[in-house]
Amino acid sequence: MKYAGLILPLALASCGAGVPTAEDFIPEYKGVETVLLDGDLVQFNVAMTKALSTNDVVDYAECAAAQYTVIRGYGFARHVRTNVAEEGGIFVGDAVYTISPSLPQGLKTIDAEVVLAECGERGIPTV
Image 1 (spheres, one colour):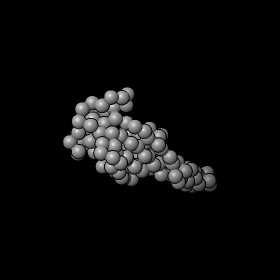
Image 2 (tube, rainbow, N blue to C red; image 1 turned 90 degrees about the vertical axis):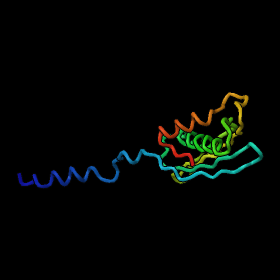
Image 3 (cartoon, rainbow, N blue to C red; image 1 turned 180 degrees about the vertical axis):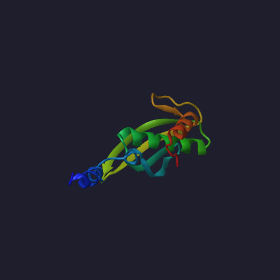
Image 4 (tube, one colour; image 1 turned 45 degrees about the vertical axis):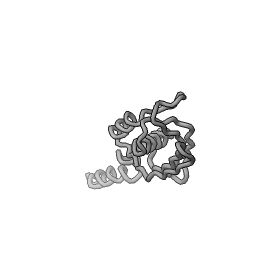
């Protein structure tokens, strides 16, 4: 039993920095930049770390678009496009939406109030 004192330190050492923790999977939202392109056409530049997939970045941009739409007094937005890239562990998204007071034509439309509520439930910041 002369090695018994080594077992606990070795066991603890194996749980070192290389083992992921729950915090490693909680996205960190780094901010939104809003750019008015033309009248009702708006670009949202978002950044985050610890995204599990590009869908996290797309969702973050959609939440920002929903908040912006409501702030401007509109009820709906239509998704035009979203580009996502990863640069040095930071995921960046560049999304463009049109905003409008009534439901626009198109397949990728959002009801801003509904999306805003969903973002709150999911813990995704909107601004």
